Image (cartoon, rainbow, N blue to C red; front, side, top):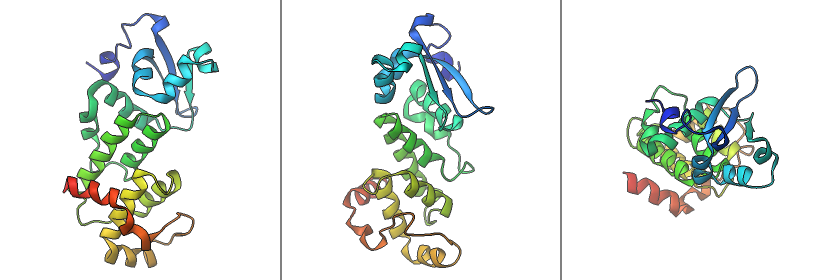
Length: 202
């Protein structure tokens, strides 16, 4: 059974389904999803579909700025829970788990964010242990999160954890603007919350 089927997408009455389109033409995808499940798991969908917004009237939600692949993981998570993110492979894009966390923040799905964080920390305590984040990964995180976000704190700590090698890369191989990424390398040890997350997964 596919995730779509396990969400009841093909069995619900039309008035209980909502059309969700993700991505930009011609690469967009559209799903007809269980309205109640979306509203239960996501503050964004609950607000959009249970209020007086256009989405509630049209029974349609457009997410043109979001990634189809990330949304598919969201659907898998709705159907399967946290285990869905075990499908993220080492060969996948470095930014995939951060993208999943950021999407969870956008749609107000904290449990989805927690699942992404758990998978991320397991990765950095597993196959990525001893390896600092890539330039692409850090640039995405710092460009798409607030300074005091949980994800930003954790990446601060990971970079600080790899201070010696990361410092060399930042000066040589990683030619990017630290100020533009809002870095605070000297204050990274202040993030006790991030340290706790790392220690509990170690």
